[in-house]
Amino acid sequence: MDKKQAFLIALTAATALLIALVIYFAHRTRKSEREVAEIVEMMEFEKEQLEEEYENFSLEFGDYPTTLRNDSLVKLLDEEKMRVQQLLEELRITKATNARRIAELRKELATVRSVMRSYVVQIDSLNRVNTQLTQENREVRQQYHVATQKVELLSKERETLTETVARAAKLEVYDIAYSQLNAKGRPARRYAQIATLQFDYTVSKNITTEPGMKTLYLRITRPDGEVMTKDPANLFPFEDKEIAYSARKDFEYAGEELHDVIYWKVEEILQIGPYRADFFIDGNHVGSLDFEIRK
Image: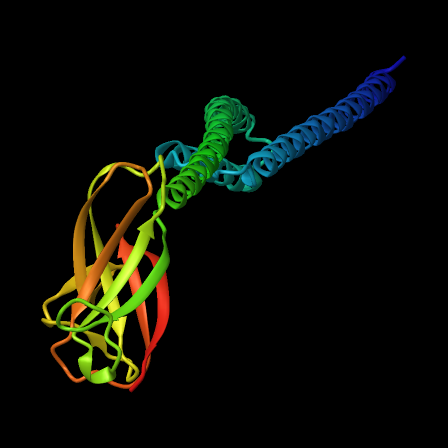
C-alpha cells in the first residue's frame, strides 16, 4: 500500500469519525433541548399552579364578612388581602424560569395564609362572642319586657284595687229634704216670707271610710245657672279644679249613719223657678236634689 492509499484510508476514517461525532452531539443537543423544554414546561405548570393557589386564596378571603366592630383587626385583615393581590400581580409578571423568585413567592403565600387564618380565627371567635352577647341581650330585653308587663299589670291591678277601695270608701248623702223657713225658723207659707233654705240629709254608713273630721259642701244652683255663694273666694277642690260652694259644714264621722241639716240664709231676691242642690264630701259628689221656688 502506497502513501496515497494510506492517506485516503485515514482521511475516510477521520471523516467517518467526525460524522459519527456530529451525529452523536446533534442527538445529545436534541435530547438536551427536549429536557430543557420539559423542565420549562414543568416550571410553567408550577407557576400556573401557584397562580391558581393565589387566586383561590384571594377568592376565599376576598369576600370574608367583616361585620365585626373591631376596626383594628379588620384593618389588619384588609392589609393582608391587599398583600395577596400584590403578590399575585408580581407572580403573573415573573418568568417561570425564575425558580428562585417563584419559590420565594410560594413561601410568602404560605406566610400570608397563616397570618390571615389567624385573623379569621380571632374574628370568628369574636363574632361568636358577639352572637352570644346579642342572644343574651335579646333574652335580657325579653325578660325586661315580661317584667315590665308584669309591673304594668300589677300597677293596673293596684289602680283598679285603689279605685275599688275608693269607691267602697265613698260616702253617700240621701234622704235629702228641702224646706223654706221664715225669719222665726218656722215654715214659710208665702214667697215673701222665705228667709232661710233648709236641707235635711243623711250621711251613709260606711265602715271602709276613714273616720275623723270631714267637711260637707253644699252647692246651690239658681234657675239662671249661677251658683249661690256669699263670697267668690268660697271654693273647694273637685276633679282637679276649684269650684264655688254655697255653704259648708264640718262634722265628725265615725263610720255610722249620720243625720244632719245645713242652711242657706237668704240675703238676696230669690229667682222663681227650678233649683238644684249638690252635696260633696272628700272631693266626691255624694248626692243631689232638684227643688223649685214658687211665688
